[in-house]
Image 1: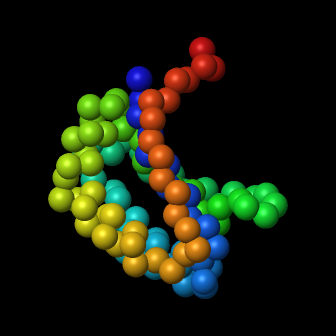
Image 2: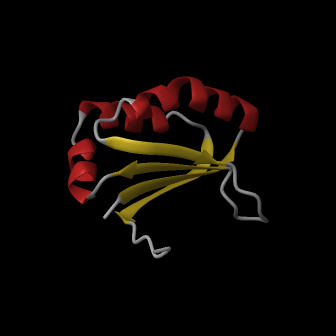
Length: 101
C-alpha cells in the first residue's frame, strides 16, 4: 500500500516570490529524499480557506516513508520549509487506499 505525505501551504505573503523560491530551492531538496516515488504540486482552486499550494510526496509503503523521515535529506527539506513566509502550513501523512480497482 502506498504512503503519502501531504503539505499544504496557506496565504504566502508574496505568492509569486514564494512559488519561485519553492521551485528553485525546495523542489531539488525534495527530489533528493531517498525512497521518494513521486512528487506532485497542485495550485488548488476554491474559495476562502483553500491552500495556496499543495505538495504530495509519494512512497512505496510506510516503511519507505519512515526510512525517508530519518534521512539527512528530509531534515534539509524541513529546515528549508520553515523559511517560507506563509500564514500556516499543514502536514499529514497516511497509507493510500486506491479504490479505483
